[in-house]
Amino acid sequence: MAKSKVMENPESRFSAVLASAASLPGVRINREAYLRKALARYCSEEDIRRAVEESPAAAGIPLEVLDRAADDSIGYETAKASALSAAAGIPGFIALPATVPADMAQYFGHMLRIAQKLAYLYSWPDLFSGDGDGVDDATKGVLTLFFGVMFGTQSANAAVGQVASMMSKEVAKKLPQKALTQGVVYPIVKKVAGYLGVQMTKQTFAKTVSKAIPVVGAVVSGGLTFATYRPMARRLKKHLAGLELTNPTHRVADADHSDHAAGEAVDAEFVDVELVDVHDSPTGRAEPAST
Image (cartoon, rainbow, N blue to C red; front, side):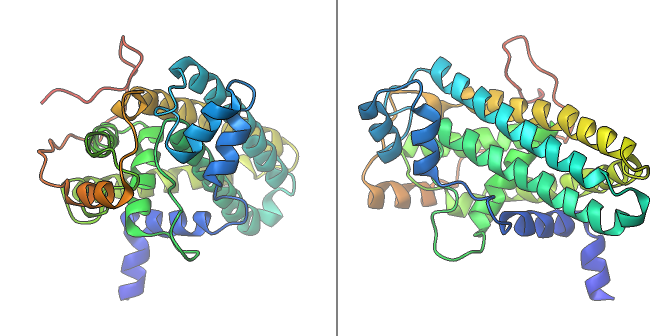
C-alpha cells in the first residue's frame, strides 16, 4: 500500500523517471568534449581552452556565438528525438506496452541531453562531475528546474534565476548544494517536480493514442515529438541566455573558496510564485509574474 501511494505521487513519479532517464546510455554529456565540438566552428583554440577550464562567459565568447552553437545542438537533438519517436510508433497497438514506456524514456533522455548542452554553453558547471552512476540531489534539483522551464512554469524560471544569481555572485564552480536540497530553492524544486509528474502522465496518454495505428502512429508520434521538443528546448535556451552567468565579467574563482561560498549562499530572499504557463515577454525572456 505504501509503495502504491509513492507511485501515485506525481513528484515521486517524476523523480523516478528523471533518475531512470539519467542512467540511460548516451544521456550524460561530457562537458569538455561537448564544448570543444560545439565551439570549434566559431572560436579560437585559446578561447575554447578557457571555456573548458573556466566557462564560455569567462572566455569572453559573445552571446550571439553561444546562441548559434545552441541552435545547432537544438536542431540535432530535435531531429534525433523525433526520429526515434517515429520508429517507436511503427509497431502499432500490439506493441504499446513496450513502446510507450521506451518512447517516454528516450524522450526524457533527450530532454536531459539538450538541458546539459545548453547549460554548459551558458556557463553552468559540470552537472555530472561526481563519482558513481547515480544523480546527486543538487543535480536532480537543478535538472528538475530546467525541465520546469522547458514546460513553461514561472516558479522554475524564478528558481533557476535564483540559483544562477548565487553562483554568479560567488563565482562558483559547483551547484549550490544546500540551497537546492534544503534551502530556499528546495520547496520550489518539490513543487515543480509534482507539476511535471502530472504533465508526464498527460504526455504518456497522448503518445499512447498516437501509436494505436501502425505507420500512421509513427508519423503522428514523430510529429508530436518534433512539435513539443523544439519549442521547449528553445524556451530553456532563451531563459539561460538571459541570466547573470552569461556575463563575461564573471571569472571562476579558487575552487575551495567558491564551493564553500556557494554552499553557504542559502539565506537570500526567495519569492514563491504560482505554477502557470510562461508567455514570452517583449524582451524575449521568460519573466516571473508580479506578486
